[in-house]
Structure formats: structure tokens, C-alpha cells
Length: 260
Image 1: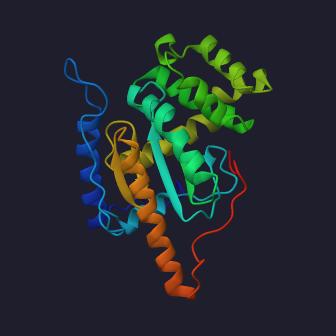
Image 2: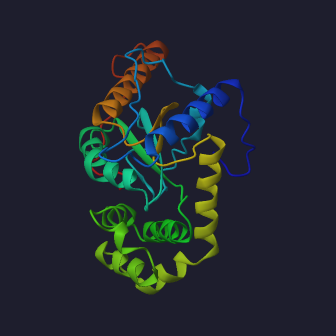
């Protein structure tokens, strides 16, 4: 949604914000000794409308020129991801789950993934968020995303030299422009806009997600996301049938890798 538009939290959004904030903390708080992965499991109903807040669907930008998004702008389902490159659970989602969603749903036109930088772990989080935006300006956001979320990457830190190395690994062609953009006003404003949107939802930890207005918090199992995406796709298809009577409404043919 445009930055200039007031973020009005009506009743439905307030309920969703409370849910996302509480579950987000539970899912990403420090694990107890011996624990692994996310400690909270989101329940996704088979009912396509359950847990969906129509007001939250408006948070999807669906901007075809968005360099931090993957998939068709008119895909029936939009997954918005609020994440921090220093977040271990975000890395787990990026390595284990997101590639499956890209292959299974983005490439066939069902899903669009929109990234939101949501740095919450201090100065380095802010710096790598800006760097990811800068890489995106040269068409290399997802490659930078992969490099920054590689196993062991965050343990090396995100200082200036490290960001330059990640940009080189990601194939960012113009290193000087990358360095300038990373420190520029446009990058800071873009990251701030993403943060404001996340905070308006009540997100307090990362990763947090919206799937066509359905809040999901934490690096949940793959099945949680596939169920939410398929329920949202079905709801979009049913809505399309109701409008046009066409059994094909709500779907289309994608060009593999569109938006990446």
C-alpha cells in the first residue's frame, strides 16, 4: 500500500495484528535447550476463508516493477514475507521452504512472493536490508537473498566488506553503484516503508507472512504454507467463477521465473 496512505487498523485488522504479534513472538523466541526449529505451529483450516482478513490483502503491492518480488503481478495468491537477514528462522525458511514454493507455485503462475525488509536486530540488519534493496536495483535481489541466507552466512556478519563480497557472489554487476545505493536515501526510505508496514500489522519477530490476507508467523513446516496457498488459490478461483462463470478464472500461464 502507498506510504502516504494512512494505515488504518479496523476491527478485523486489529484481531489479525494481535494474532500475528503473539504467534510471531512464540514462533521465533529463543529455543529452550535441545529444541530445534519453530516452537509454534500455525493451524490452517481447509476452509479457504478461515483466518483470512480481507483488509490485509491490500498490503500486497502487485507492482510489476517491484525488484524485490518474484512471480506474476496478477497471480491469484500473494505471499508477503517480512524478514531479517540476521534471523536464523528466516534463513531456515529461505533454504528449506521458499525454493519449494518457487518451484511449485511461482513458476506456474499461482503464487507471487513479495519481500519486505523487516530488520529488527540492529545496525547490521539495517545495513544488509539496504544492501539487498541495492542488489535488487541491478536485478540481483534473489541472488543476493540466496547468498545472504546461505548456511553460516549470518555468522560472518554483515559489515561493509562482507556486503561487497555477497554482492559479488550474487553477480551484482556494478560494485560502485551497489555501494552508493546501499548508503543512499532511497534505500533507507524503502526499508523504512517496509518496516512501518510490518509494525502496523503487529509483527514483532521474524519471519512473519501474509498469504492473501491470512497471517502466518514463524518458519512453519512446508505443509502450513502449501495448505494456505492452495486454500487461497481455491478461494480466488471460486471468486473468479462467480464473476465470469469461467472454470479458468483466477488462473493463468506464467513464464517460469517471472519477476525474479
